[in-house]
Image 1 (cartoon, helix red, strand yellow):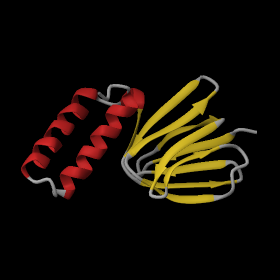
Image 2 (cartoon, rainbow, N blue to C red; image 1 turned 90 degrees about the horizontal axis):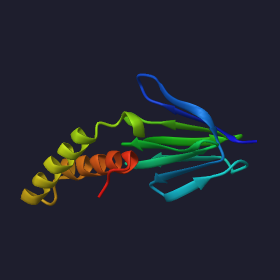
Image 3 (cartoon, one colour; image 1 turned 45 degrees about the vertical axis):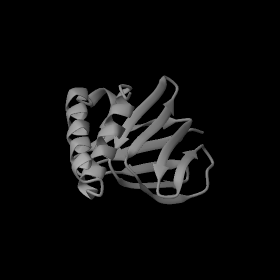
Image 4 (cartoon, helix red, strand yellow; image 1 turned 180 degrees about the vertical axis):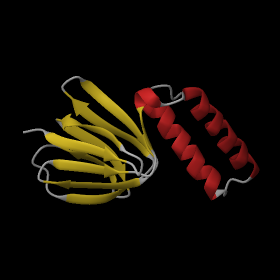
Length: 130
């Protein structure tokens, strides 16, 4: 029996489908979920969630949020998330450049560090990361 996966944002249900495996980055580290996995609740870090389907891999850029798995039903709750095909690559590259410029001026700028992580996640999910 496959995993039932839902990605929910405050505005709408972004993704719903079946998966043989899901990989996500949490505060506990990179974690993979297969059918039959024990229940889990965690905090998502900015990164790419990979949902393996019968048709390939659905990559999703998440900026933060929560992940919960129970009874082969995996729910991702994220304030901001984008499916790979919906990412504006030029906008993500511009955001990365702005963040890097801010970090060059102040390496401890937490907002710039977060913006850089979000932009890198978007570019990675879109398949255009350097």
